[in-house]
Image (cartoon, rainbow, N blue to C red; front, side, top):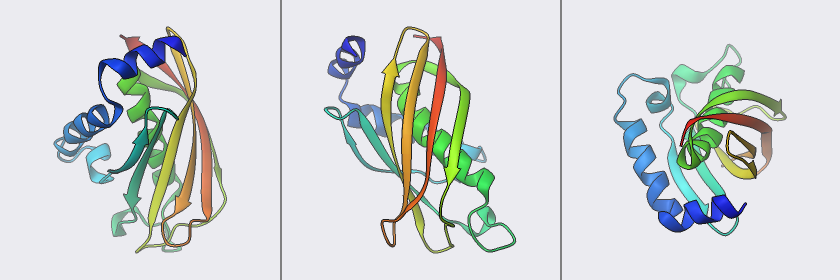
Length: 149
């Protein structure tokens, strides 16, 4: 974690997250941009980032709730933004637990946390909650492989 703390001192985490979200939101037509992620909060001390993903009509499955693949995409973006802040990286693996449906008109609020940080691999965990009730809608863990520093 010493390396992580050194990186966080070089650039404020919030500034880094906002910079990455500007890039994402300018990628017109790309999946990340279509998901409309918004920064809710971040904490350098706790090494966390929280993003909001509104449930949009195009994301619905036949039961009128956010499609599982879209939920997975939201988790990948929420954890990946923090992983990419630390190293340019790609998703190595990801496991997701779905616990509540996420209906249209609500938002999925995902908080990602660094659990381990090495030269080549970064592992993060995440918890997703419904904005409307605060109930846990899912959780995930993922490992990202550094492509380059």
